[in-house]
Image (tube, one colour):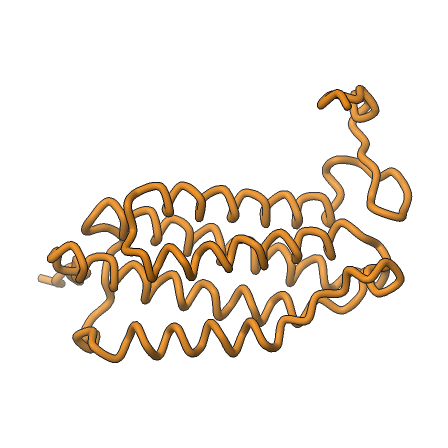
Length: 185
């Protein structure tokens, strides 16, 4: 099978089990952004994260692929592609609690950065927040099935990526970078 089909040359793409739509359709933008998040997480994984963080992110990447499949399908339940986010949200919460248990409590906002691993995880977190906003917007379309379970997952995932960035800094022996508020004179 050839990788190029030429069917999208006119600026449209086919939805799974559905019609062809413009490549700038909100649904296409949403699952394209999920794909981008998956790639950014893959990049973060390539930075030499500790094994336990890498294992978590491997599972997240599989979940993001499932989310993309649901978003690419106008009638996901009809095609057995409706994704059940509830157990995965619970797993993210367990990981967050576990990673946070031995981190120094935050006393100020922190800047994205520190170690290269943490910087990549912070980038993934910001992409995750953008994806969340796009899916919230998509959810306002009455033609789109409920996406609230995806929004909840992404909200929790961005929290996990934040904690994971802090954890990556701790593993590397690098301090988080505190935000310094400009002083008024």
